[in-house]
Length: 203
Image: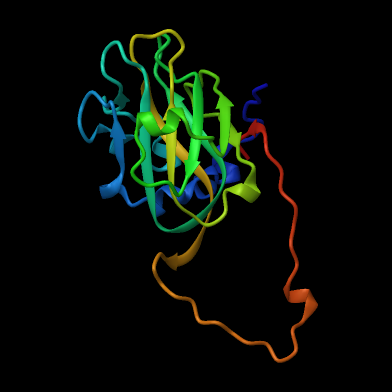
């Protein structure tokens, strides 16, 4: 089930919600089976630029719609949801499988691996849908790998935009945080909150 926007993006400031693109280590982003080498980098952009493709997009090789995209971050992040804008005429991806902190995997690896989460996708040309993660499983994400096995019947898979909603730790990876020892811990400083998963509209 897919839900659409029920608010004004400008008033709600969707751009700040989807700002994790700033924490993507773009030079190290890569894709397997992309028709144009390096084109995968063009799909990561600011929320307000998501529909401005200027002709740039990611597309698989003709006759083979499968894509595998590796996205490392400059700091560990927590991912709440993912948005995908695909191509027209059946070239949008129809399914997405996700792997966390698994560097260097290829198509043969993902066939036998259990994804941390999977979604059946909806054709989403305006970026008004988001796919919520099982948030507790998407903590301390140093890299994420997206596997798109097939399209909606097209000879290729085409992607115009990929966005991540969440928050960064603000600490660069490989930085050792200082351990603070508390003489008298305050219980109010150690609150937690519950999370859920599913598909909802962008808020």
